Structure formats: C-alpha cells, structure tokens
Image (cartoon, rainbow, N blue to C red; front, side):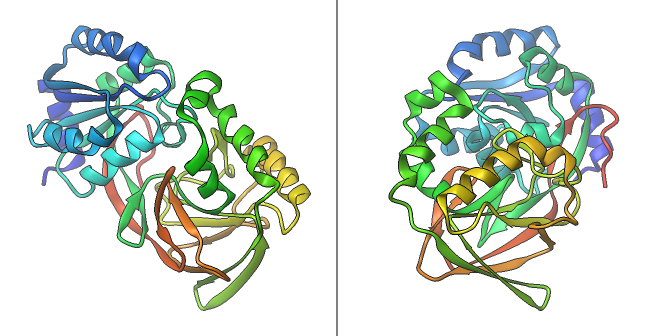
Amino acid sequence: MRTKQDLGEAIRRDRRAVLVVNAHSRRGRHLYDRACALLATAGFHLLGNYPVERVQELESTLAAAADLEPDLLIAGGGDGTLSAAARLLAHRDMALGLLPLGTTNNFARTVGVPLRLDEAVAVLTDGTVVDVDLGLAGDTPFTNHVGVGLSADVMLTTPPRLKRVTGRVAYPLTALALLTRHRPLRATIRAAGAEHTYVTRQLYVANGGFHAGRPIAADADADDRLLVAYPVGGATRRGLLRDTVRNATTGHRRTLHEEPFLAVGELWLETDRPAPVEVDGELRGRTPIRVGLAANALRVMAPAGTVDR
C-alpha cells in the first residue's frame, strides 16, 4: 500500500477518479451534471461516472467503481452514501472524496469538507490525503454514530420525500410524531472496567464530531481513537426534548470531559429489552452489541492543512 503522501501526489498528478452519486439524496439528482462538469474543469479523468437511481444498487455500484482501481473514489450523497463508500474503502489503497449532497452531512463536516459543491471539488483538487478512524458496530464499519432508541424508529419511518423537501428538519418532525408511543430503555454500557447505566429514550455512540448537522462537542473528532457515548435526556419526553435542544445549541461550547459524555476506545452496549440498532441511518441488528474502533482505517481527501494524527 502506498503512503498517504504518495497517494496524494498520484491524485494531484494523474487525476484518476471515479464518481458515484446517489441520485436519491436530497441534492444528488439536481447536482450530478454540475459535479461532472466541475470535475472535468478541474482536470479529473473519470474512469467511470455513475448516477445511482435505485438505492438498493448503491453498494454494488460503489464496488464496481472501486474495481476500476482509481486513486480517488468520489462519492456524492448524504451520510448513508458516504458511510457505504467508507465501509468499502476501509484499509484499501485509494482515497475517498466527499461531495456532501445530503441532509445533515455529518461526516463531511467532521472532515472539514465544505458543503458548497464547487468548494468540495476544490478540496479534491488541492486537498491532502489523511486517514481517520472508523467505528465498528459489531463487524460493521461506520463513520458517524450508532443509535439506540428513538433514532432507530425515526430511521424506519422518515419519508424520503419529507427529507428532500424539508432537509434535516425531517428527522425532528418524525421524532415528534413518534414520541407519544415511544418507551424509554434501560441501557447499560461496560467499558474500561466500569459499568454505566442510563434510563433514556435515546443513546448514541459517536465516532465523528457532528450529529444532526451540529457539533457533538468542541473536541469530538474522527481521528482521536475515541468513541463518545452519551444519552439524550432521561426517561421523560420533556427531558429528551430539552437535551435535544441543548445539544443542538451548545455542542460547540462543550467538551468530552463534561457530563454526560463517556469517551472510550471500545464498549459493550446492552438494553433491558432487545432494541434495534441504527448505524449511520441504517438498521444493523439489535442489542446487545460491541462497539469498537478501526484506527486510521479510511483514507479521505481533506482540506489542505488538516491536522492528521
């Protein structure tokens, strides 16, 4: 496998890339042609370019694109699309390029990639190759988070059309509709020789630095060998709503040393009843589950000057 420096030099010199865009993402359908044009103007030689109209074909299309052996696989879409690309490229000798075309774009925000399409393409042109951690939910790699509780129900029921029309507001709207019939969980986390129990309607384990398009904490990152577990509220609906608002408005001012964050390298999560586990917006099994880390598992194009640990 090439060094990150050698891979970055190959991308800048040869511009060998493939493009996969999820045309069902919020902006993917409308911006696919413009993405192709911007990449061509930037001098990229696309070995293949694929607008994916059927969500069930996304993973096979990404695999076919990677089989062309580009130096850079450019994925356009929301967090689900970028997470699928990250799973595919883990520990491989190519870099992931991000075109954030989704609703919350948490992974792109974590890496520092701008949300404007032309600025994101500029990162692919002038940026640097870094490696970041991936979380592991069981054996499933993830970029952003694992969720147990209300978020799994929200992922099941949020209408795609509502996401396209309202953007990230779609998730809290769906959550409010579900909240009246949702029951709290007793969740237990075992990590670093200690046990932590929470009675809550929602618990997250994050690898990245953002959730719902907002900072989790000022020092949360995807390149620090840490997972961050935290409940959102207690048993009451009011507590869930209060903490949701608090997290969205004050995350950039909080640190991982404060309550209720638990920052560890790996953990075991179980609940008082089997609960669906949501991994980067997709249902991936049920509790109990081990959540760990694959350190520096993914190479990604980040803005020039990004600190790489």
